[in-house]
Image (spheres, rainbow, N blue to C red):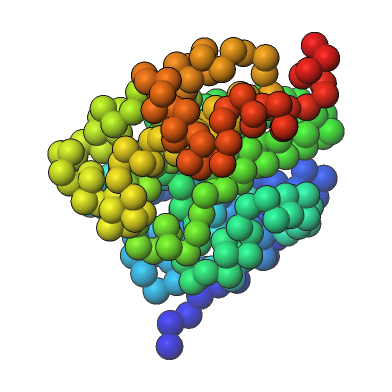
Length: 288
């Protein structure tokens, strides 16, 4: 029978701070299988990290964010000759519970915490650098300023869950190819959906035919329908939360044809954009 260690709360995790951020490489990782009494999130900065998790080996690409739960049996190894690095964040069960209580049903926490394999998110290089910079900033704060460190850390932890893990489902974790999941997530960020299918092809590196087949197989829709849905969701938020003219919203969201925009909008929401705005906008926006 295989043996493993149960690592107790890290000495820096169970005291005032409640977390520990460290930078890992082949020289300072636990090579043996282990569980621990706290949560971890790690973010790969390079290709070459292999995650041994619950009886499976997963070769991770750079910019992969992974949540490790206390009951997960795991370890790390590296591809031959690799000096791959990753950022590791350990945080206490009490902080995790505070976060989960606050998030509530906003993201699929039950699924994330109960599935056989832990959730992963595939980030852009920009997002990885952004998170690394935030970690580095936290590490520069005076260690006696516990309140400020704790605040910055909790903000970052909240953002990682709501921004990157929020789309997790059992299906996306186990079935959808990592490259396709990554493309769909990236299309939702930074208004990439405005640029349509050419941006999807750029992110995927696949042919139009391959992308279309994969979208239909794993999501049940065409790339065009996927983009249109993202654009429509964006227009809804703009209609409710801004005073921008509807025509401007149409073009800013990436639609090139006003008539087609109106047709799609009415088909999805059952009314015209102007009627939707009148029935749903807030008093605060109206009174500006």
